[in-house]
Image (cartoon, rainbow, N blue to C red; front, top):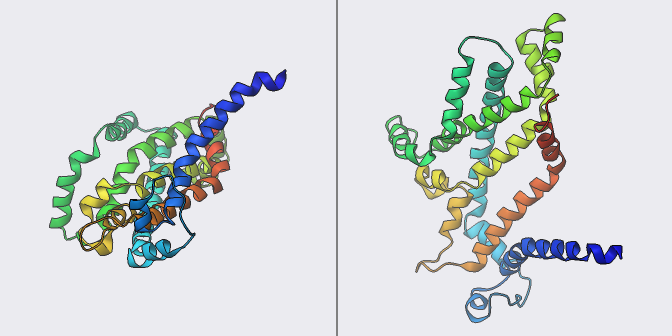
Length: 275
């Protein structure tokens, strides 16, 4: 009887898992197909053989290796700057007491409501005038600035959950602001920092609009921009290498998420309760 009562739930969960996994399985299987198989056989047909030629073609000839390196060179500095500045600003706005901090916090929150599309053309003009075009710096600076409002807002929310008595006790014991920040705030927010860093990582790594706007040369293309370039000399899309490149991108991000899953859950739980 217990099995029968739970049978609808089991069937629903099975269908949900199938719906979630089918696109990923279809993508990976498609990465092993040849160009002729994409045009001559149904989309659900299995590949004739598991040949990794599409992966080598995507990585070397398609320039995916260079695109991944560019994405890393853009994402890592942007995340470091974003988290360092965001955590420090949140600490100053939430823990430290000074006149005007509420107005500054509202200014950061206002940045969340500004659509990024509105500032792309002025930013491109500024970058061109100061000579930063044809480099990766426009991407790093833009991602950092656009990610700061959300980072500050979320970090301030996590800091709000830490009892103020902790910082007051540290002050009584002779700890200054910097020591209290590095010895108390940062260690207690470690899981939250990992969570926000991963959220911002997905936002930066998967971005296409900003990267496409400020990428002026193929040598500077990130992963998402590089995926648009999988076409031959006549303009037709090379589906096999394209599916292989997308599979590498998706599976790499999935492995990263699974590896940091515990820290993400702990960070979300830490921000949901107030001490």
